[in-house]
Length: 142
Image (cartoon, rainbow, N blue to C red; front, top):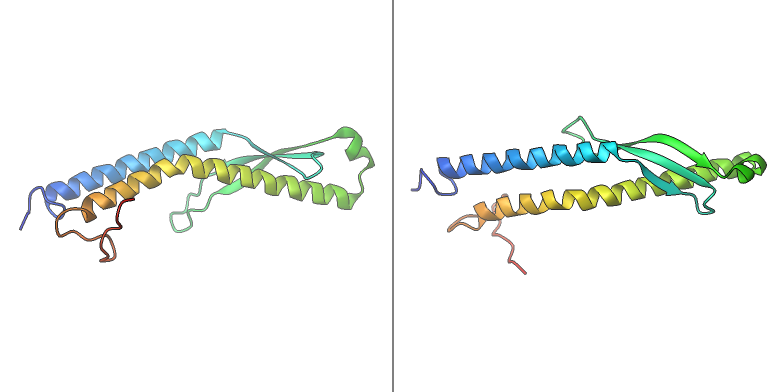
């Protein structure tokens, strides 16, 4: 029985708690950085640009972020001659493209945290006799 430094012991639990706090701080820093950025998407005809902001979720039960519209930019000549349906579809296309850009950028930034979490659990699961959360054996490294 390893009550001091093993993965289930007090020191192991304190180390895991410290690592979890570090990961939370990294997540908060990434969310702050993303919140200060503007993500732009264009309509298929490139006549409408949607500029979006990343809004981090405040609800831990629903961690999905929101995307707020900062502004829309239109090609002036096209805008003056466009039918309402063309405006509507251009806005929707640009908005969806902006969300895709925002999701791709946030996913890239959050990959570092995913690696940290994986390493933290592998440290616990990889200890002699340790199991991954859920009672499964740790996944083999490639």
